[in-house]
Length: 317
Image (cartoon, rainbow, N blue to C red; front, top):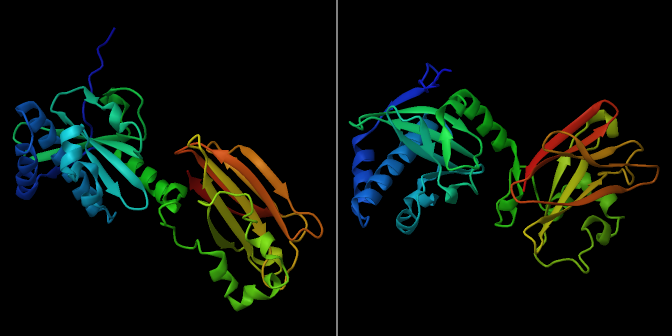
């Protein structure tokens, strides 16, 4: 029986720790009530700083000031080492010592994180090694041999950047391409057919619906499949009492096409790519729709298809 010991490989990355990083980490440590807490904050701060430097090297924007690790109250009350990545979410940057085989992942960091990066330090604190990442955790200790390489982390981050983050919609933050329905009405090429449609149909009748609904629309271009006219995908969300989110989808024709052509599919797929819900347009359908509910952080996709042409949008609640 062999004893498995984690050994960093060539896929890790070593970065220098700047003097400003060490000064900042020490300033944060000096604010703590005891030496144990001070050392925790010092290493957490350096881990976040190193990951921030790495993401800057990769031209990935970050926001240190928005991170809990840069908030003196959160540093004092919790064991946090998060880094805010705009339009993506918060990365947790966990420090480990040289020769350490496991990484501590505090329970307070298990939620609202889009990934975990592990940063290794030696006693000199002159440089740090990025050992790898893992997308999610559910235990307080992470064996380092379970880490995925940094290349997989960049792929993971890229996929997250492609997701439409619906939770940010409630805060008024919308991804490029998602506009108000009213702004699309003002596009001359789209206006004519909508003039003959009821406001109730296009605006997803707000009667008896929550006041906190948020909705946006996006043009989906399937090319010549729909008579050279894009279709309009409307997404409406509203919070539920049980922390779930209600999601209402509608797909409309645009321009001089009052009706969708028969055979247009609107499909919802779960995170594994399995069809969850589906609607198909029939003759004289001016729109098709689907409605469902989802859990926080749940991912799903919406596919619009006709014949052999399809476009898929990816969402995260």
